[in-house]
Length: 463
Image (cartoon, rainbow, N blue to C red):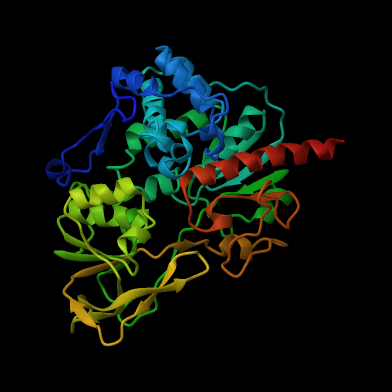
């Protein structure tokens, strides 16, 4: 065994997977997991733990794998994470725990994410479930949103004995895990739903089709229904657009709409009467993970896909793994290019996109070089549909219907970075509703931290 290199994980071949929505990555066998786990040198001061937003005892669970105690490995992870099978698939380990892995100094870091996925999958397949450690204390806490932040917060509170109800606006729980991430990256029936059931098994109730701010307000939850605290984990589902001519044409989608219709409304399944008409040539504007997801989805629905990004390849914010998979599958990239206008035919449908070449200038506030238009470099690309993947913002409905809840200029709820406490007493918030669009694991970390703060807040009311 070459200890400097990861044990390679099996994947569907590109020419096969572009024709289906089955998971691309096939996971480790138990033998492969043990071999990969044995690369961990069990540091006395493990930097990987500090790189994990939920502080999983990474050397601890890996040691259990090497000892062939997979149940024990799951129990270690379960002390810290409510969604290990999800995080093992979509968490950006390469810039978190794996980035600081000591093994990575002279070789490749340990495949921590793939080992977490293996452990969680083994537990599910062998009917190993987390158990509640507390008796009910009779106190009610409301959680708004059943995405990663809400599920993480609810799970922690339930483990401390709280009576937790999650209020979800959509008809299925899971938030971005079910509407935003494609099946080929995160299977819903096999992975997401069982992890949600694990949270429900702790006593957490989930009410769907409840739009907080319309169906019920936070004020009513607290003043009328007797919830002593509320956690807002409603995410950031309001898509951003460029404001260019033609953006309202037929055939222009936000990535949120496109992915929701495919993932939650089953547009990819021909037995469902919910198709997406995108035409043969699709341009995806943006360079993040959501852009990769939208592009790879459009490809599987039969389109020829080009990703249009205003910066260079080295500035792509998407995960390296996702960019690699997109390229393998035949998706084209058009770098240093920015749309100026969407061209529309006489029937109101997209017929092309006018673009301009860009060059990188001085650094902006994000530390990246600012893209600048090259004068006179306009050109047109022929497309039938355009998917805008330019980030998202929180929906202002909750903040606008809650007394004393302060937001910033981006409509993000203002909350303490450590506790999630907002300007309204008893109301806490975390995840994308506070930070804007970010990652699943950061949302989970915020939910977990807020749960701790809620517990301390409610206990302080008794003293």
